[in-house]
Image (tube, rainbow over all chains, first blue to last red; front, side, top):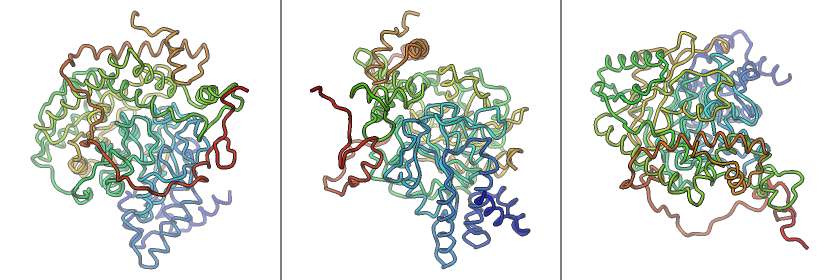
Amino acid sequence: MDRFLKCRECLQTKKMKNVIEDILKMTATELVKDIKTGKLTARQVVEFYLRQIERCDREMGAFISILDDHARTDADKIDSRIAAGENPGPLSGLPIAIKDNMCTDFAPTTCASKILIDYRPPYNAHVVEQLQKAGAIVIGKTNLDEFAMGSSTENSGIKITRNPWAPDRVPGGSSGGSGVAVAARMAPVSLGSDTGGSIRLPAAFCGICGLKPTYGRVSRYGLVAYGSSLDQIGPFGCDARDIALVLNTIAGYDHRDSTSVPLEHAADFTAAMEKPIAGLKIGIVKEYHAQGGIDPEITQAIEQAIKVFEQSGAKIIDVDLPHTDYAVACYYLVATAEASSNLARYDGVHYGYRTPNPTDYIDVYSSSRAEGFGDEVKRRIMLGTYVLSAGYYDAYYLKALKVRTLIKQDFDKVFEKVDVICAPVAPTPAFKIGEKVNDPLTMYLSDIFTISANLAGIPALAIPCGFTNNNLPIGLQLLGKHFDEETLLRTAWDYQKKTDFHRQIPEMVK
Amino acid sequence: MTDAITEQEVRHVAKLSRLKLTDEQVRQFTRQMSDILAYVKKLNELDTANVKPTAHAAPLRNVFREDKAAAGMGVEKVLQNAPDRDGPFFKVPRVLAD
């Protein structure tokens, strides 16, 4: 209560009323500018978002930890540095929510799993270090499907998260908490991780932007591993400029991730945004639309978006990705195999949950894991163990790695002809809570258009492009060449200058 | 379905995975894993005889760090999350009988 009063005091003076309405509609880029020029203080911005969390999160369930004291302390530090004439960095005073599978030494990191419920990492993830160095303020840790395994955030071992556009529907997953945090304006930006669509699906279902960068662009040091050859950290934000702003800070080489790619030049994604897209070649994938099962309202919204690109002078070209139909099968073999290996570390010995009364030392492992992991995690560990086991390795795992080559080659060929591929993010808008949770295979098929980008390692950006008649957001996906996030962001920004889908805010959080 | 994984195989995989399952879970996983394995069989429609496997999509190979000693994390940090400890050691139940 005390906390609530303090924040009311700070916000509800007459002058502040206007500021509150302003902040709700402001982008991260605008917030940073106003904080740096002294129009707003970092503390005011933090108080606004804490109040929004207090107001909305009881129903939404986006946050696992709300770091109010930490955020206030950091905000005051930023404000005194600005008052002293310093520049605290490109993200000065910007609150950010972080998916709870990235390590923070100042807050628990649970992966929404009972097995890590009290885990306090002894170090910060690379991205957390980078954000703090740039002046950003971590305001909370967000809910996810346990260990990022799922497409709806219903597999969280802690709680479900609701979609702010329709609270009886899922927000998508696995980064559902980070998606909802931004959609409900409980944070201006957030970080998620994407192994098979876990940033893009929540972005689409929640009506915001989300980027899965190129594999190797952002260090995975301190990201709790699920499918190591597929996992990539990326930002959520309201528009393409905010995505670029955060990407500038988190991208770059880090020797602690052996798959981090050293590039000659550090990219400035913000600077690259303004170039027009006239002459850009945009590919439309025949197989995606031949697939059937795409909601007609989604097809229609994508067609409308394509018209906007054409009006900007882009050339639309039909392309083929002939192995599209095999991507989900390939993914669930590769990802589960890697998961079974990565999750072997949860042994009840070094950290995490231990069963209270083990019968012997083997039982420390098998009972701790049985009691600590939820069903979807167990299912994926089992499936991965099976496909890697003697007699099945060649038939399943090795076969999947070969199909992965074919899927990657499909993209290589297409990108000889076009600069960007334009596709839906998902075949349907957000589905109902409980609708698919007992049928894992149907749930897996929600990721049919997102999974290929992880297998091929290419960047992919989800942006809002419309609403269904039920007022559910529709997402558009732009896929690009390796390390060509610039073109994706530029294409998205050009579109957003001509449309206003990205500026819509769900009624219930206003 | 001929390709279905059997309950016996599921129990074996659970043992390899160090997961203690209830009978109900074994039945449930047998059904669900059979569905998934039947679905992934569609990969066999593709001829991959002359295709090389891709383990990851990064343009990298053989990443080595310099072979140089560096400071570790320190015992207290390493043990701060231990479920049970005895001084500077992780403590586990007895492994060998008397």
